Length: 134
Image (cartoon, rainbow, N blue to C red):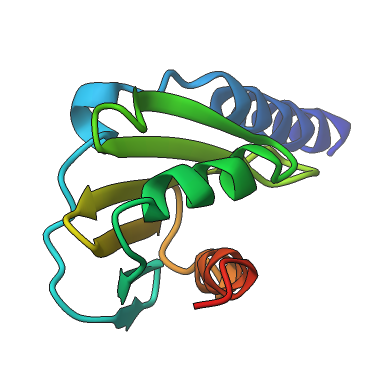
């Protein structure tokens, strides 16, 4: 019985390490945002908003100030950035691609592991957009 318990504990620890250390491939996650309208999904969100031509630069400041958020690929100069935001305890990664298209900002936030993000991506993106005071 103890052996089974130790195997379960070991599997949980190994899974935690995998989630924290799995590499994030920009070729897989840094993709143009395909959405043309707002959409809430079980594992993410798409937002399309009028921000003016400097929307990406303004949102970049907010995103980089968000705890546990780093840039995976892109830049304001490129017109597109993909961020990785990790949960505090386990370190689950969420990917948010933001693309400037003229005066329109296209945002696609999605999870990597699991089926549902429990609205975390929606809340983060909507918080960023509210902070932009659109």
